[in-house]
Length: 518
Image 1 (cartoon, rainbow, N blue to C red):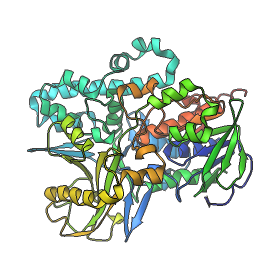
Image 2 (image 1 turned 30 degrees about the horizontal axis):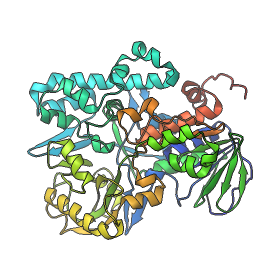
Image 3 (image 1 turned 45 degrees about the vertical axis):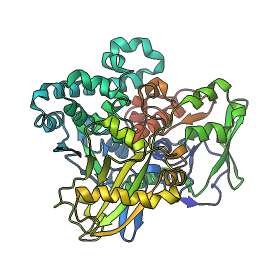
Image 4 (image 1 turned 120 degrees about the vertical axis):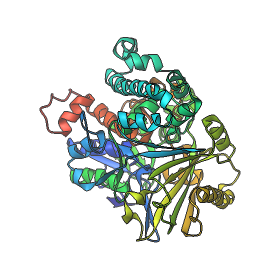
């Protein structure tokens, strides 16, 4: 890794803008397969929303709390484990299993959601025994939907007419919200609310959230297990960066791409902020989609129709996060690694409250319950997270301290004594997220994950310009580490002209087919 300065060379086979999950995965995979790669990152460390930071001896993850796919599954290694092993850096990350993987606390009820189809169903059915069959039927629909989403990805967007036969669950629910599908299987409104408790991970309530995307996310935890990266998720980003460097790739930190050079609709390279011009026939953008096309490429190189379509896309919510440290024994107080503390059973009301800056629900995360070494002995780190709109207040600088205090009050109500034992608390606003990630309006999930903005309704890895490829949570399949990781693999395959199966063959050193002729 190098800081500031110039890239080592003036020509690469691929330049990647941004070292979020999508960009890092694409870069490390391509470098592993012999491609000369440069990654340009404006921050002082790789990872995007994976990055962590340290304050007064306490380590904090900036955004990611859990991921799936870090161990073995009935179908073989999970996605993350398989990638790290394929890149030969599996020994750089120590993943701890988290089960129950979240606890949802409603008025008068706490659901501890366990991994495994039967475990998750039983955790809910014990509170709603009349809905036991409905929970199992709903999980089966989610399981089929996840598999068919994978199948549709392999078939490609041009195979729409074949979906009805090959992927009937996906085809039936392609425009459905989570609420639409849950309502078919569960009669009790409280049971429906309990099943949808994980919606804050995707930033939309069940009435607006894509069922297919929720199902894919939920089953990544239920089927593949939920995991925390010990030492913080920065170590996962660092493992990918280490693979990149070992295989000859270059990561340039605290550096900015000012322009993607385009000539006659064809990418020619990039220009860095320091003026260095770098030739490259392929550029992968892992950063904000609007910045990519409107600023780095420029409207003059794009069709007005494409720009109008881009302008109609809806950006997801941002978030406000409190990073805190306390001497309170949160384990004894009943805290879990990941908790959703609801003051109401009505997710729509909760979402409407968030849009007004009122908090009837908070997310409360305590990673030291899994990894005590994140804090000095006798202490815990915690995070309080609430999705919020970027333009909620005129000045986040002026509003920040008051919101921190209000969120600490909610946490104190759940865990009496937290304030009395507080070591410190820091607030991060939507403006903070925008400043560090350059995601427009501090978006946590790229485009919002409504039914019309997933699948074919979302940007794919292809772009209107020859040589420009996209990766990250602004592209298919969508938000989260799983989504961004998958997009990075698709971007690498697009550059090489091979499908996912052939890409895995090459990463894992299995017999391969010849690469296509350029």
